[in-house]
Image (cartoon, rainbow, N blue to C red; front, side, top):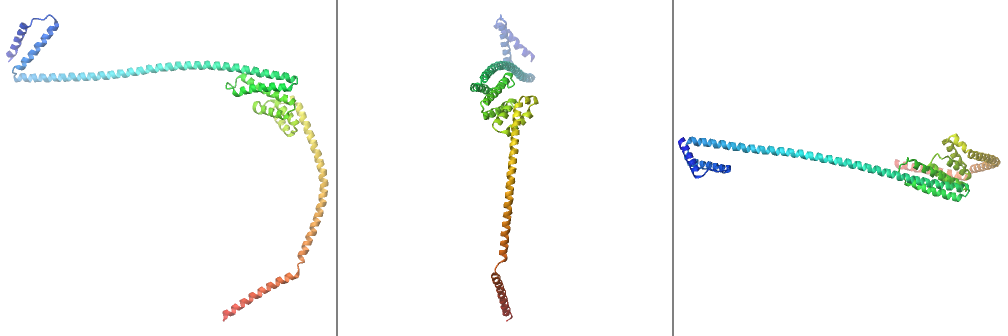
Length: 362
């Protein structure tokens, strides 16, 4: 059997060599080798196979199939592993890209925040400068109005002084109401002080014009709204109350003034307290005179009243006696009639009772 296998192969090789000349290139050699193998496979199929060869071929085919299957499985596993590796790599790359983006965004946001902060600081500085410029301008204008009003006040031109003080008050007070900056700014505090001074000078100017009610209102506004420790306003309030004959109010504000301020400030306004003491003495003396006059009038009236009451009591006693005597003098006829009716009723009742008993006995 072995001889039969080997013989055709040798014949085929000879035939190939005789028919085909030797190739020049390697590619041609490879093609020829493939053709020879294909021919050998065809011949082996055509030849009758023995059982041993058949079994060997079957086993070889099974082994080849197993190898192919293993190769396919290995290829599939390799593909899966590659895909998993690619997915992991993709995920890692995505994470890295996200981190890079986040870092860039954070850096951009930080840069933007820094830029915004710098811009805001610049804006605030500009606003502060603008506020300071406005504040200084308003302070200068309010002091200018005050100084002009003081000149007119010294010349005793109270109407013009009044006008200048009011212009300064309008300017400063409107700005204070619309102000939105720092309240603790020293320039702003000076504006508020100038506003109080303008109100105080206006009140003093009106005091010279003897409009005491308006003086009272302005100084009350200063104490309640602007500055509760403005001592000049308390002084003018006491004087205005004395001029308007409001002694009780003057004493009330004098007690507040004494409780709020020290003796040094009170000593500055000793004249007002002297006037107040004089008015209190006058009021006390007037009250004593009224009390004496009332006592004299009440003494005379009491004597008259006593005589009138004695006469009244006498008349009342006489009236009561007459009433009691009339009660005692009731006529006897009415009593007799009343007694007759009573007896008649008693007899009638006795008669009816007696008749009823007789009927019951029968």
